[in-house]
Image (cartoon, rainbow, N blue to C red; front, side, top):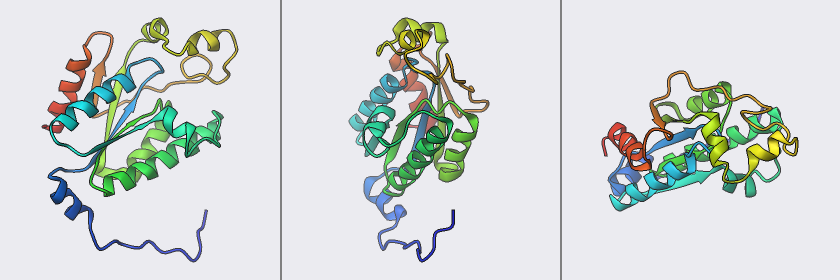
Length: 193
C-alpha cells in the first residue's frame, strides 16, 4: 500500500535520550504460545519483577488489544495478520518511547512473528511459552478449548487452526515443568537484569 503525502517526523527527544533518563535499554519481549499456556501469567509476573527493580515497562495483552484498537478484527487469516501488524507497530512506538515492552499474543504463524521481528529488528526478543496442548486444555481458564471442540468457536488455534512452534526463539520457558518464578528468572537472566 502506497501512502502519499506523508513524511516520518523525527522527534527532538530521541529514544537514546529517553533510555538515558529511564536508565534502561528498551526491548520488546514477544510472548507466543497456545491459549492457556501461561503467557499472560508469566508476562504479568515479569512485569511485576521489572517494576520492582525500577524498570519502566508496559504490557500489551492480546485480549486488551482486541477489546480496543483491534476491536474491528475477527479471527480470519487476514484479520490475524492485521492484528499482528498493528501490534508490531504499536510495540515499535513503545520501544521508541524507551520502555521495556511485553507483548502477549498467541501469534500462531511463523510468518506473522517474522513480520513482527522485521518491524522491531534487534529490539525483538521472542519468548516461546511452551506447554503441551493437553495441559493447556486442562487449564482452559476461559473454557475456549471446550467451546472449540464443541464447534462453538471456529478457527481456534491448536484445534481447528494451526499453531506453528517457533524454530529459534531467544527464550523458551516451559510452564508445565517450571514454576512461574523459574520462568521469570530465565527471562531476567537472558535480559541480564
